[in-house]
Length: 108
Length: 139
Image (cartoon, rainbow over all chains, first blue to last red; front, side, top):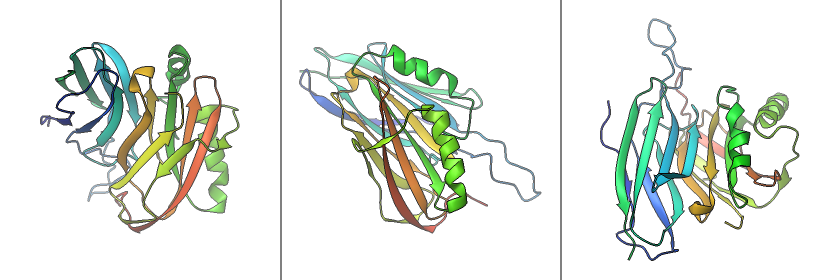
């Protein structure tokens, strides 16, 4: 179940500007606390980590825990570099499934 | 921050390894009951060790009343030069601003705490009570 994540970045930024990046990814974020109809615990499966890199260097990381809502939305800020630079976003869940996407942070 | 120990060990090293202006913030929620005070202490200890949190510098933006506990929007901001646990975030100088916004689950009315640890080890804390109309933790 890896649908394409949605990432909203500014159309263009000035070098040095602090800009907001919004991300949304589809995931059940099963907490591991719920039981099914037979009374069996539904195993935990959440996205446990999110990393954003700018030109290969991590700029923002999150360790998510079961208290994070399903289809996690995360917004954060990044300082725009001197020139257009590729940003890569990676989500990893408990089963090791990796969802990633790349988008350039346009400067100029 | 958390009652889940698995992800804790490397967090501190990451913070120490980050550059001088880095700050990071963590987040936890706990039921607003007196007997949970000890649980809160334990959770805090896991997150920040023996450091004593000081009120201030961190602010949580949370609704007073959460109609749907499945997805409670929140933002935490840290003033800086630059139940279950909910999440922890690491910021770097390239973040420009120590701010994050996301959505959390809240099973019932409770206090939510935000802790922020600066790169010099100082810890700041903010607390807010949220009234939850429909719980969001399943079951």
